[in-house]
Image (tube, rainbow, N blue to C red; front, side, top):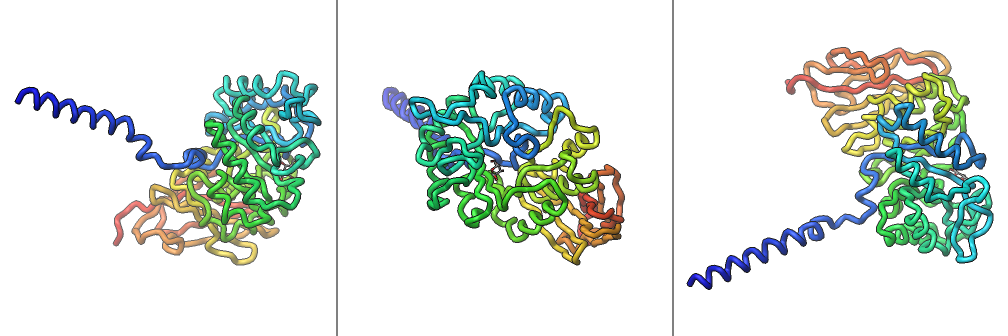
Length: 396
Ligand code: GLA
């Protein structure tokens, strides 16, 4: 009898421990990609400000500035080297190699340095035979290049669309996705296909973010043009998969402070990746304040991962909203006109529950007002007012 008891205890224990060991496999069916970028990626990219004028000293200094400016503290993580980091040719084994003059220490050393600052390194290639600037790229070299990136300690790949030989986009990007996954390293996959093949329909299964348009320019017109292309896309975004209206131009001098602030706020409402594109080493205090506005960033990084959308369009005056996990709403009033405008909307109109009181918090002045549902501001030309609205009483 005793022996029989001991036996069943042994089997029970066996089943218990086997269960423990297998549980992670059974319950985490998510693809590796779906565990990354659960909120929109934040970082910096070399292209908007520096183009091909890049080297390892610049990248190190940018990583340092990301820490000392306080950007790291508010969530900026990825330091991404865009086009022009490669040598003009692959090495004898067929590997991509860094340009020996501009990156003499190599990408691995740079990744180590960036990691030592508590940041992550991103790199760039194209799903074509060459990068947009004519350097060697990864079409038909996917496994090899992905392995190299992983070996070097790369954490993010921006994958462009130049010289694609007219080959099917889904196949080209899918192939790199698989190659990245096969490395076993957590690498955020940034698809840069310029919105040509309606990537929002297929890219959520392949990458963590996908460009929805051609390149952003350093002007208000470009920001408005790109904004208009985002209408209708919010339903495709979710944690791990984001529409990318392109990198930020904040602080690059092409826009007024009011316009820069509007650009940043719109990207926050859109749950867009926040990739700064300015010279972090020499930014003005005003630029730093815009890029590090914690309350606006909190809207962008909200864990529900709902992309904001336009609910009112009256020519020059628009209202955009973003539902947040807590039940609060972010509300953005946009004035595209040449004169200041008074814009007002009621909380009920944005779908908030009826309540007797609402806390309307301005995310740029950081002041709060209690209203009966009125959300209003005089908005400067080419400007925004951005609020977080919270209903404080139970429904009537
Ligand atoms: C394309 C991309 C840009 C940038 C350049 C680099 O135009 O869309 O974001 O990466 O290539 O050459």
